Each structure stands twice: as C-alpha cells, then as structure tokens.
Length: 295
Image (cartoon, rainbow, N blue to C red; front, side, top):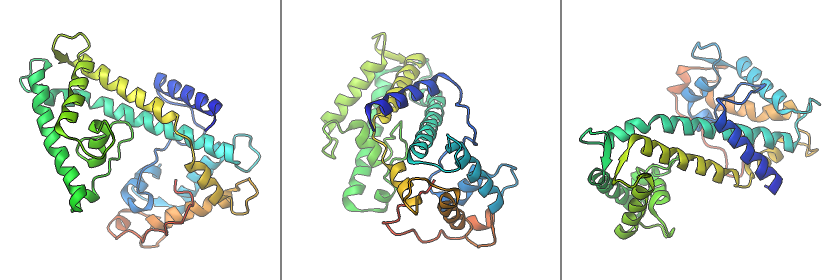
C-alpha cells in the first residue's frame, strides 16, 4: 500500500468512527466468516425478506448490486483499483461494527470485575482477575504444545480486541518479546502497565468511565494500525477472478465465485439455501491453491 493510499484509508477510518455509517449504493453487509460452511450465517447475511431462506435469484441480485456499486466509473466492468477500494471500505466498516460491539460490552465486563459492586475496580479485584487470566492462558498455551483438541480452537477471531481465552489472543496481549511464551514476570509487567494506563487519575482504582475510555482508545489505536497493513488479499482475489487477465472484471467473471459460494451453502442442491442445508455436513474444502474470491 502506498503512502497516499494509507493516508486515504486512515481518513476513511476517522470518518467511520465519527459517523454512524457510510452511505452505500449496495447493501452494507458484514463479511461473515465460514461462507458456505456456515449456512445459518450465510442466510442471515443475505436474506432480505426475512423468510429464513435464500434463493439463487436473491443472492444474484445482491451480487449484482455490489458489483454495480464497486464499478465506480460505471463502465460495466470493475478494475483492480475499484475492487480493492470497495473491499477496503467494507473491511473498515466491519472493523467499526466489531469495535461498536466490543465497546457495548464494556459495562458487562466492568461489572464482572467489580466484585464488591462499589463502582470501582480496586487493585485487588484487578489482580484476582489476572490470576484467572494467567491460569487460563497457560492452559491454552500448553494445548498448543501437546497438540490437544483445545489447540484446534486456539485461533483468535477478534481483529480489534484479542481475547485471553485463546492462545493467539493471550500471546497478543501478554507476550511482550514475541517468543511464544508468557512467563509470570512478563505477564505481571503487562498487567501493571495496563492498570496504570487505565487508572487515568492515579487514585489507585478504576472507575467505569476510565475503564471504557482506555478500551475505546485501544480499539481506535488498533484500527489505525490495521490501516497501515498493506492490502494484498483483494488484489490476489481480483487476479483470480479476472479470468481473461484483461484487467477488467465482468459481472460474469465475478459471479463464478458467487456461484461457488452459493453452491457450497446449498448442500442438498435444491436451489435454495435454508435450514435443511444447515443440518447437512459442509462440503470438502477447496484445494490450498484456490485463490478465487470468497467474499
């Protein structure tokens, strides 16, 4: 990503954070993980009429609307810059949704830490929580070492707020030197820093406003950090979709991946994705070298 692109993306993030939503010409749909593997999520993402099922005509109409919105110069095709720009805007919107969802949970998390319900988190309460976090973190790290089933569920899916309940999240939060381990001294140092940073007025306790302010600041800093990450995924996907390699993706080329997504969710192949498909096993995963678009 060049400097100009980074600056524009950072500005887009600032705009998203300052306003409820970005006006879109196409439906503002989140990117839901799993695609055809998660049938329930796939239906929820695209079921406009709320009947609990999705026909190919409905899905094709959604894809058409997205393609037309991505075609910024309205010439009937999508070039790589149009494709990358639309994808980045949607990615940042998804991060904004995640941020808002995480922030909405701060009161619940604060209440769980405030054991004596006096309206503040004392250092003793903070440390008691740390004991639980450390014990759980060591368990998930051990699971990575011994190859147990827990290790298979150890990936953290939160882009903005890693959770200490997974190995990836625990390391992201507390592995300061990135050596894949979190000894007690390293953990304690990170917890001390976190308490001090959150206790803005330095009175030795954390109130609800301090707790939320620290959390929001951390989310916003993470969003700004993600804006600096070079965009490669969308460009690889464009190359795979642009079958004739002429630099101009047609709707027919775009819909090759759309049909693949729909067919993966339509497990009984009756032309409609519904609750019956959710009861069937997922299709086999594509080969590792399949670079096609999966959005």
